Amino acid sequence: MAALRGLLVECMTLRRVGGGHSRLAYAQGYADGLMRCLIDARLVSQNELLTFVAEVRRGVDGPSTKISRPEPEEIELSAAVGS
Image 1 (cartoon, rainbow, N blue to C red):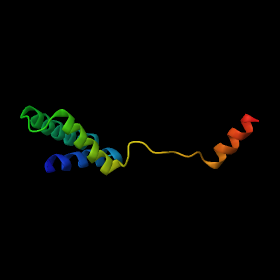
Image 2 (cartoon, helix red, strand yellow):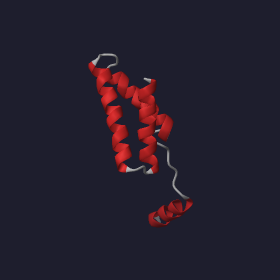
Image 3 (spheres, rainbow, N blue to C red):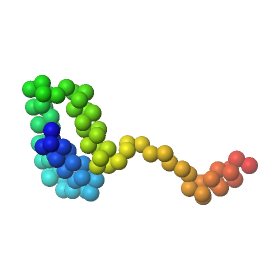
Image 4 (cartoon, rainbow, N blue to C red):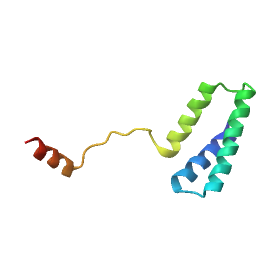
């Protein structure tokens, strides 16, 4: 699982920083192949793997959703439109 974590971190980091397409595709291929082997060998279930990938993604990219607050200009605009 440590090897898979490293591959996933590499994929997500390359995607975030805009890494070269060929390098990203190569890393994704290795990660996909390793995940397939783990599932086929019944070393992990699909749900366990999805949970693992979500945890790694959260560690690299942060939470999947954020609470957003409107900017002060948006508050003024909505107040003006509403009156």
